Length: 350
Picture 1 (cartoon, rainbow, N blue to C red):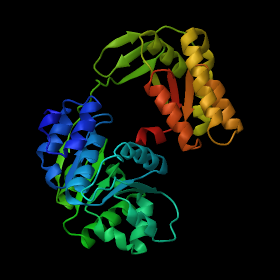
Picture 2: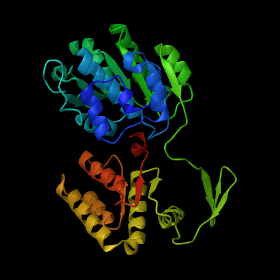
Picture 3: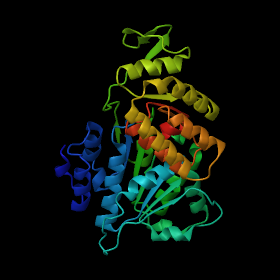
Picture 4: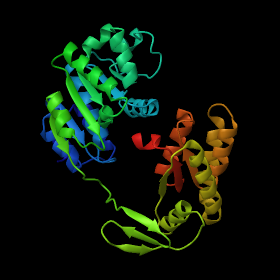
């Protein structure tokens, strides 16, 4: 499906075409074909990077620009809340029917009041817990919500799930014709959730980059499809060694670990192993990125360590870093300057 075929406001279409999006991914096209842009409820379950965010953005902007609606975007994590805030800020230059610009608000804390100031925003992004608090405080502006986007909806089956489940139920009770768009990268019961929400369901394992699963043992990687690949021994620690092998093939590496301390120690080892492999240009770029870390926020032992590690081409990422530092790291990784990124599962949620 071509972007030009989409029934969306012209100013939105121009922005996404200018971003280089000329054709939708298959999961995005499937979502559009369910009627989600016409107000149908949808549960969209597809892998990371398959384009769920764009569908959420298109639905939100259509509600606001064509129907003078109000959008509530729910996330399970504060870090994800701020990430989505920055993504929607890209549309803050768009003009509504009343001639005013789109306003994006975010709230992830302060559970003790109704946050009346959020009335002024067209898109409100908050955690599931904050939404629960707003409902309990009977925030009047919530009666005007026309679209709810629930991110990482698979967490409805976790210990924190009842908070999201009750919030969605109460929002539907308050506004029976409210539209709900539920997003998830991993979900086993999409059809059950869709039935509960009276929604269409799109479930797919399509992804833009093929995922190969394997297990490393000794100097070999045994893949799920039966293929076996040999590896060279560059480093005594397996995660670092596998990373260096991947870099030999021109890739980048994301290492998920179980704790903040492990993220930091792994990144430090990776940085030491990488330094001698960097070009002069890469070293210059990385020193500049390290300097950005030092100039944003309070200077601490943690930020000093991070800045030093970055100069070697690696970094760590966890919730102990402030939002600006995480954004610097994410951008540097996306742009190819950071070669190895060691992170806690918080990054996967984003």
